[in-house]
Length: 269
Ligand code: DGL
Image 1 (cartoon, rainbow, N blue to C red):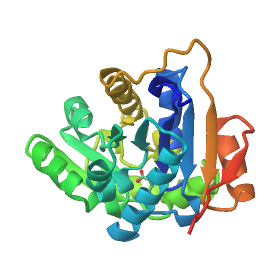
Image 2: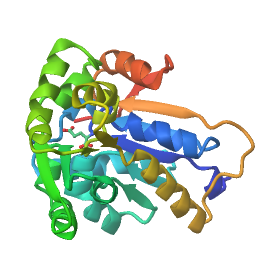
Image 3: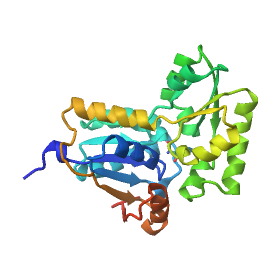
């Protein structure tokens, strides 16, 4: 007997562990849903990879999540969203919710009229980002800063060490020097560095993470497709990685704050 569609899980993926910052907002918003999470850590970072490669990986991961009966997909990665979301939506019929750097709320929030966007090269070079820039660039100054190396610090579980601090200081300096008072976290790995970013930027700078808005959008999409779980129990989480599970597991346990099992993604290459 096939499970009722409402009982099926939600599939979430990222280039690595960064999407856990979205997963935790989904868990908060939808406590009864079962969640499947794929960390493509064997191929992280996506930031400087070709769009073709990211698209191929994204298709393979969505196929895996659908084979596990996902009723909806969350692309918890800005870079994969920029490279692959249109292809994924054209190819798969389940609801697909994706990221967007929070330029709109940042433009509404800034007092100085200058916002800074921290993201990967892939995101900043995407058509999606060009459209956002065109839409809000007349209203506010949008400073962009790619952050090579930061994803790797989070993948290593180093959220506050010297190497991480030095990189953040380097990437924030030009934004702060140009009076940015609102910083957009345009990569799902960066919310795990928010404490350090806030400390370095100072209390007068607002840091904006779109994850909770994405979780609310997911709820709306599920509700309108009549796919929300009606179970009266706490939802579960399952994790897979394309890297060696013994390498990824400690970082997932650190960021998710549960010593959870992490399985090997089948056919990770
Ligand atoms: N979490 C991914 C994002 O949101 C990181 C990209 C990468 O792996 O470089 O863009």
